[in-house]
Image 1 (spheres, rainbow, N blue to C red):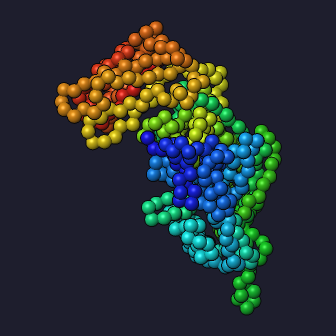
Image 2 (cartoon, rainbow, N blue to C red; image 1 turned 60 degrees about the vertical axis):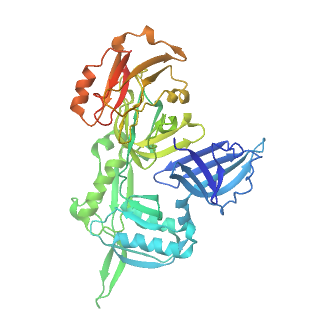
Amino acid sequence: MRQFRVYVDGNVFYHPNLSKLVITEAKVSEDAENIDSLTLSAPFNHPYIDAIKPMASVIICKKGKETVFEGRALDNGSDFYNTHTWTCESALAYLKDTVQPPFSYKGTLKGLFEQFIFVHNKAVEQQKQFKVGNITVTDDNDYVAYSSSDYSITMDAIKNKLINTHGGYLMVRYESDGKYLDYLDDFKTKSVQKVEYGKNITDVKITRDHTERVTVLIPLGAKKKITDAEGNETESEERVDITSVNGGKNYISDDAAVKEIGWIWKSEVWDDVTLPSNLLRKAKSRLSDLVNGVTSIQLTIVDESDTGADIGDIRARMYVECISKPHGINGTYLCVSRTRDYLNPSGNTITIGASGVSLSASTVKQDKNISALEDDLYGQTRKIDVILGEVDNINSQKMYRTELIVEGVNIFKTKGEKSTMLCKVYSWDKDITESIDAECFIWHRKSSDEEADTEWDKNHIGMKQITITTEDVLDNASFYCEIKL
């Protein structure tokens, strides 16, 4: 199991196996579009309570070998019981510590990002420096022209000149040789976990903000260039528009949305777009998002990695397969934010990006399909490893839970070995396995041979317990039981 620890300036501040180093809260809020935060609390008798110096100390949280938070405390305070609490911001906030001097830049988008980071790194200590990582945001012409006559905060400069006009996300990535800052058009990582109604979703909240809806968009491009009689080129205040390629109109509208909610106008500027045709294309894509408003889907989940399973966490900035048929959710969505309490994971939430999601017309009913967590198999030997019912200790409000019991060996080393797997069903803490018909028990196998798995599944329906032999495990395989009540 990957243990969660907290370090302050390189020294251990919290470790689950050290009774003196107790903390009462460690909640990390991740946000794909903003700076992550940490709420950290410790009792008054913590031996290193004075070690945290706001704005100075480096606070790092690790789960196993993975860094799940790095940053600094912004403030500290205490309550009636003298419990101390610090609000912390992640390493991305280091970009707020430096300024970009007035500049005039012409070149590639990648080059401008590199220039911003170079200027930042020159002005701060090593701890706050970034290596330029992956840059996947692109410009149609691979050429941008920006200038500024003011001193601007580095974070603001990146947002104003890059993110607001070209889109994309900033992501801090930790490697063995340092801290990288990526500028990505999209995230490529997908969670190995599936979030599913009736299994590990405990609550669903869908909010649609209609105040953000727009039905008419006026797109504006780069400022036009003027050449005087002597051939000198200057920049005018007039901007490129779409009049010449849009039937004389400088705006586009969505007829269906106008009919529904009326004419709601907005203008947006693309400073790097010089061709009306490109501006029109960008505007159409942007309006398709604006007409829907902002849809927020918050799911309260049980993360399998919190149950002791050796499996990757669900994090913001990755895609997650989410299924909740009563709520019209069925697909792979970007996890735009994640709230995670590492000491008390029962209320952990994720917010997925899914514009245009509508509720199903059917009444939301409790889905009584109960299935055990699939086990995470690893290693080179023939191995069966089962995740037991710890998830139900976290999610105590669920009426039913299942528990898989393995009798025999978990690792098959020689031919002819076998183990028995038994699936028990509990209602609260009462074992109700005997009262359930055998036909409700449906066993599944997952291996590298999907066709063989399908045939295996057909032969293992209606059994409360099964026997697994070396013939069932050609290399690595996982087994779980689905209960249909």
